[in-house]
Length: 251
Image (tube, rainbow, N blue to C red; front, side, top):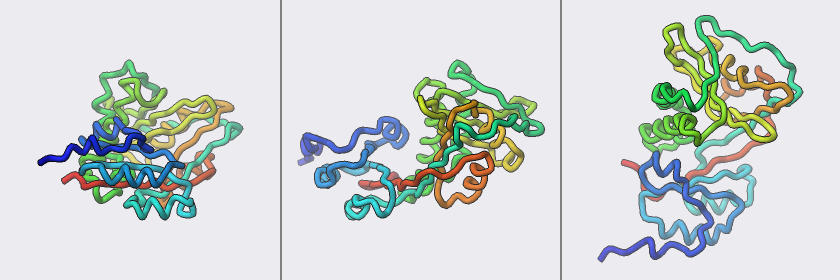
């Protein structure tokens, strides 16, 4: 007899469906917002059929919930640093990378969506999804592809700046969230064959606005990213740990 696991789900869930990741993974994914009832979470995890995935963020290893989350099977995906460029950071003209053009696009530029998605899939290879050995690279690439393409569907980001070669090929983009109190680099990507040629710097500078703070998150062990953001006037303002939980895995 096949057991109906849906009927075993707790009446009150401490996590929420992550529809975006579910579509990319192809099976149920959920997000846990802390603080939460970890006893209830234990009951919740016990009845999820495999495969399933859940993620959460906490302040660090000294967070009181860390030990219990790891006991429940959560593992560290990445340790992260949040950087901020102050609103009063010195203004300067954006650099112009030789041989490339930087300009802003809108969701109406739907004709470039596939190219942007392919660029993200091929070059965003150090994300927390790529670093999780239980997530295949193809799934991790699909996450980044959909993340970038959601801009053109009006579901992710309010601004995007791209860099193009003379032949029109897109070699970099900076997807930006515009919040009431700041702008956020949501996803920044350059083609591997044009790195260290000023493309990333130019598409980052293109988003800066007078008297507006800018934020970005990066992995704590990413030394080149740390040097890059500091060179643009960003300073660390906080840290966190992203944890992943799996029931089974993608073959």
